Image 1: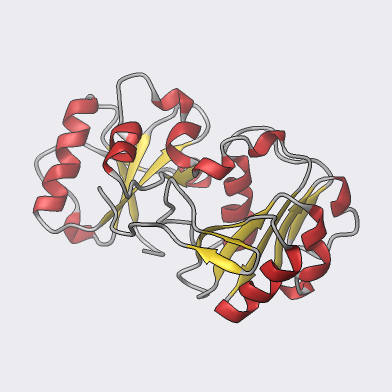
Image 2: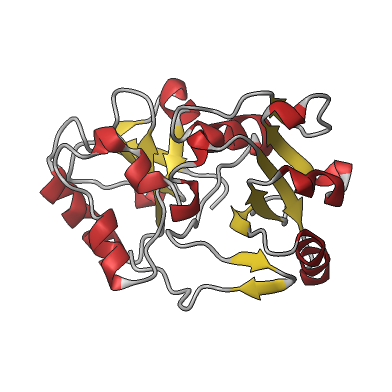
Length: 233
């Protein structure tokens, strides 16, 4: 869902009501994506496709331009235990990173190096992974507007294996003179800012969506897919 309308119920209703609104939306066939503002106030927003899906009998606010700038999508559960882990609870949204970060990115702010790149073919990824060996390459998601998959790796050896035009972001001291669209010699230390940079500086007209808590990854030239790919919403 590249484009849409962002609304929040948070100024008017509690977490239980919010969760019930999501259930009602599903029951009524309304497609939505869930977002969290990663700067205070840490409000939840739902992105819906069209004005016709706006709720008629409850209160809500539209996202401001400042809100939209800081919105990052929540990760989606594919297993029942993840559904429990990711369920919204009173007072927990201040720890927004627990809801927006796939498991391999939980400690990314402690890494010395991060490469984020795009790829479109199975063969391309297999060749890169074979050359990198036992070092994992994680899938982050997909650009719906541009059609490419987005991957990340924490090892600088990947630098020479990626075509310059495919480098989206690069962070760390090895990123000096980087060809990536966005780069810095330090890794973002605020949790969630890595994805903010991707949304704001790279994707620009869309935001990353449909992330899973556990990530598909490549290693030694082989893909390690998720065991289940049906979202639990």
